[in-house]
Amino acid sequence: GLADSWDAFGDSTLNPANQEYTITTAIAINGLIDWYNIEPDSSIKSNIYNTVLNNILPFTTNEHDSPLGIPAYSLSSDDKEYDVYNPAVYLAGQLKRFASISRDDSLKNITKIKSDKIISLLMSNLLIDTNGNIYWNYGIQINRPNDLVHACYIIEGIRDYSMFDSDSSVQWHK
Image (cartoon, rainbow, N blue to C red; front, side, top):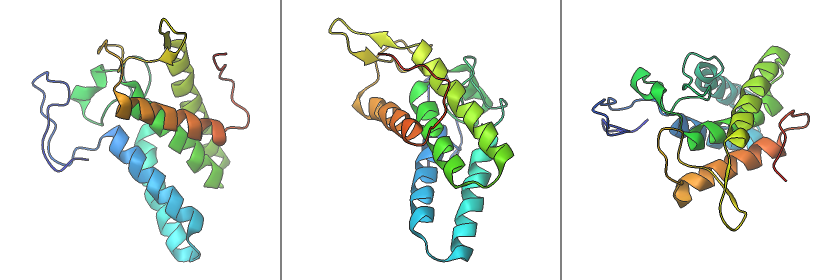
């Protein structure tokens, strides 16, 4: 989360300090999985794995999804009404990465279903500019293109999703 309270959408709903946001959680998971992959101590690896697992679990259900069906901007009920692509897609990549280190087949299946759904919904809402380039608006309710940082979160999420996906049913735009 963020150290300060914040009205994420300017809608007079103030998230408290340390609110858990999808993007900050996904970024932390990314770093933890990077650490897990190089950590030689099995005890520390186990702790890292359990930390990642505990942070992923809230996103594996539909409880914190936006109206579109992607993980909401944050775990705050006030933020659930907004469909925002970049945090959800970045998280989809981390769900795929986590599945690659998990030994739990049920959890692998849950993360596969969730990440496939996120990417499928992203792809079904892509836009194409006058030069034929793919892009996405910030979200459904926020009808403006992503800035560079937020677009990079989407690209990184797609990259990780693709890198760790061996059997997706998602159809990529050609």
